[in-house]
Image (cartoon, rainbow, N blue to C red; front, top):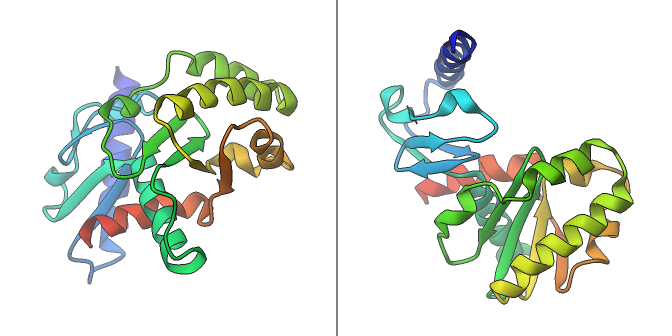
Amino acid sequence: MILGARRYGFFTAGFIDLIKKFPRADKVGISVAGVVNGTRVKISPNIKYLKNFDFRKIFKRVKVDNDARCFLRAEIRWLSHYLVAKPPSKIFGITIGTGIGRAFSGKKIKSFEYPERWEKEYQKIRDSKDDQKLARYLGVRLNLIIKKYRSNSVILGGGVLGRKGFFEMLKKRLSVEAIKARFGIRAGAIGAAMLWN
């Protein structure tokens, strides 16, 4: 518990220092992995010390959203402005990194803010560095989600897609069109800034 409190203190101090670097900023958008309620993080499975953290206690003009929704918001904006006149209507956004982030265009599905039951198994396979096995595993798991929501395309992002050739391996195993994220690790931050649009 002491370590958690210490990390919480370091995080708070770091956040304040970051804001001070931008004195002209009058509002902030935050993208966070976990369950979000207004400006408060109820739980963040992989960042335990953020439990019940309220960003408004540090900065008054702040908006907070789940990282996968922020990711998808940014990527859909790019698609609609630069790639196609009208992006597909049922787009899934999936981030593959520490956990599996999920978002669906046009809907705020709260259950997506919680980890999937199979994420621990995913993490073991991911850490084994057997990318073929990981692509097979994710293909099965992600296709079930895609089918349930009748998605017609999926945008993939997250740190694991940085592995050489992994996007192509996974793309072959998905039942719908797969698009590689344009903004990479910046997508969450861009989508968070868009909360003020």
